[in-house]
Length: 500
Image (cartoon, rainbow, N blue to C red):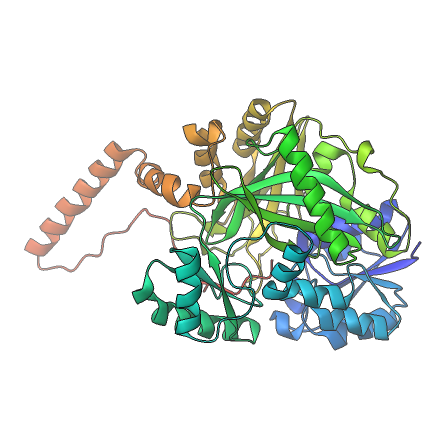
């Protein structure tokens, strides 16, 4: 086992990895930017080193600085967490060159799965179903039109090296091809350094269902069941749960075997996630493989009893999996809410600031993964995810009720968060019935927004009437009066590229 591990990340995931290392009696090294001097993960690590200014390109994405700290601290391994350098082949390669274990898959696997076209080909050859579309990058409008004529509209053009919804455009008919192609290419090049795009059939209201896999370096591979990740906005997940409300035992076995087969096809080792889209008829198709630890790994841990982070570290150290597939059983139901510092009723604009009051919920079946505390100032440079709140229940109904109670108890003051949105989703009748899909938030919660914004409408009308009367009196007196508004301030912080 490793004696010392450097965590090349920040915030709650860095803290999560540090805790896992402590249980394995491994010394930890934290790196931090100047903007993260007060971050909680620094306080919990055995050693900590500042690696540069706040912008990620000058700190958490600076490979040379991180490798230098690893050498100076005599770290045997680096855990990248998720985001930042977790799926960058060059980073894994540099680690190997410097005899530092990269806790994750090899650079060759990162390259293969980072190329969506190569990943599609690999999965298709392995017998894993893929969505209809092109098996090579499309070069021009004619190529796109040819694929569309074969598979039918609507279609998606997607970045070959893409993710997170960037470099993706919907095309509903032939007339939409030129503009969609140009925009997708431009966004793909600016976001991922390559303008290459490909085409997939667009599924109508699919579910997003993923399987957690663990694979050691001796060829042993298991899955830990599925996670339902359909509740999204702008292709970013908002809530997850396990098991999926639509899952049957038979379908879980089939999809689980395909997930394992996908990992086998690339000789995978480490923790990873095979993601599928499931259409309304129950047919499933490979979407992508996330070759790293997932944000939502905690809900799988809570139903399976397997510590995914510890197992990932053990695999990195060369240990054999302690579990067989028959050892894995899903017990109960878990729901996770991603708490973001965003205003859900102002197009999810990020809302950084200082936490004036913080109280995390507690009780049986409740888990909070966060690095927040009262007095902490959220930096403007990074992802707006500030906490993960998960609740366990014997069944879905109990998990939902427990989540309602936990959200009511959760106090994060000084900033705007997505907690009100999560509360509204939990009250939605379609959600309660498990009738969800990837456009659920857009279609259902959009109609709920005005109701949330105008609660207490009678008081609002009275206040506006008073302001109007005052304004009219002032005009008669020849005065210019700007009435004070009681609405929440909207942060001017620009939406940053996500490192999730």
